[in-house]
Image (cartoon, rainbow, N blue to C red; front, side, top):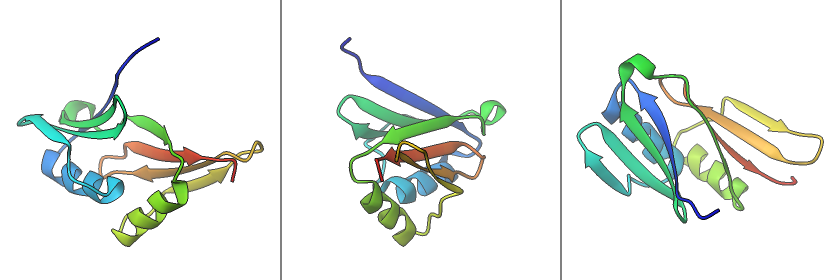
Length: 113
């Protein structure tokens, strides 16, 4: 299957979310299509976006598998973002979960550790 992925996260306050996701992801949005959304390209044909939708905020769960897990974690820590959970599964895969101000979960996975 040939597809592009847009994973959306509802947030209560767009500017607060943009500032936090910039620190988590290490860059500003790739583009802002309108007044209520910000989009980051996180992989070829893979996008993570936040949208101001207060009534739906706080329920997202997104995991990005990356080849540079330690570098991403170090970068996030250097920018003041700490994980909420850090798990290593029996198969050696590691998943590190972060939570934004609304409680949305964004995790980075990699492995085996």
